[in-house]
Image (cartoon, rainbow, N blue to C red; front, side):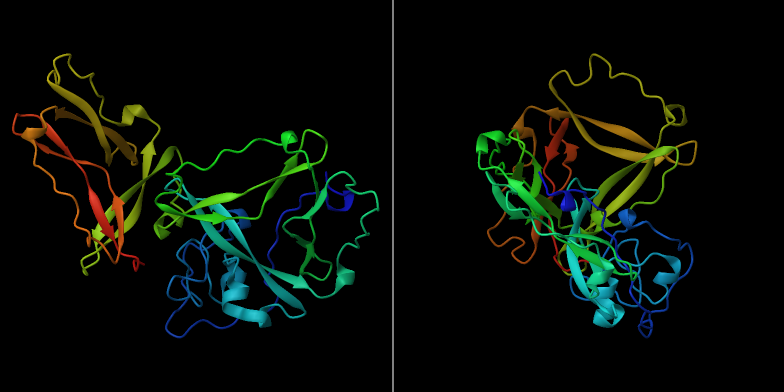
Length: 350
């Protein structure tokens, strides 16, 4: 249970606190198809892996140029990354981490910049905690919340929780499985607080699996009347490595706009194993795409397929090994062989 002053969970706001800086030389701002973007729908950051995007567009759908305030599509961390303290006259820039779903089943991590006012009179006045607050529990400070201030900036408000000392009043947690986030990065977020069975609160860990694929954090195009499906492809980077790209397919919801499939005959693959491969995408009659299943008759005779050797110890020593969808080739007995697909992905892909 929280003290009444802090019990309301308030949304985060980000304010661009003063005039923007000019665009970077040689990076003219593009204006086509730009429109205001709600804070919950903003993706991308003005800070890249090796450079910033100040003066142009980020890797997501937000912008870092001087016109983004006019269009309403500024990246949330533009004040902190591109403008510095000068963008928050009369305040202090504070950055927090935000997590959103990625298209590869993990999460995207982005930075949210807040211009916190230095005028305490522009913020709600807080009273001291009463002496009997949380007398049978432990007072724990949670993550700060940010609300609009009276002077057009933000107020940083503390979050105080009364955490129970009775562990049996809280959900019991199991260790993370060994393969949790095996292709991503485990990031610890601020703890979460939920009601406990004894009327206080439970302090719960908050763990995120952040994707390593920048393309998985780029918002897909709109797909009215269909369903967006993401597919990961691999392309040579010209330096002996590969780069991953997330392709978005707008799959039609109208089954009649796609070829009609017949059931497999009873005699299909009597001596092998039926294996479903990655779907293929073709144009549908309504201008979208059809997701077509891929079915393979895989031999049960391993000797009818090429024999594979283990990867050498120094394979991809300067990159990251990423498994892809399996490939299928003809087997010596007239069926197919299911072959693994392994890619050496560079850490320097744009």
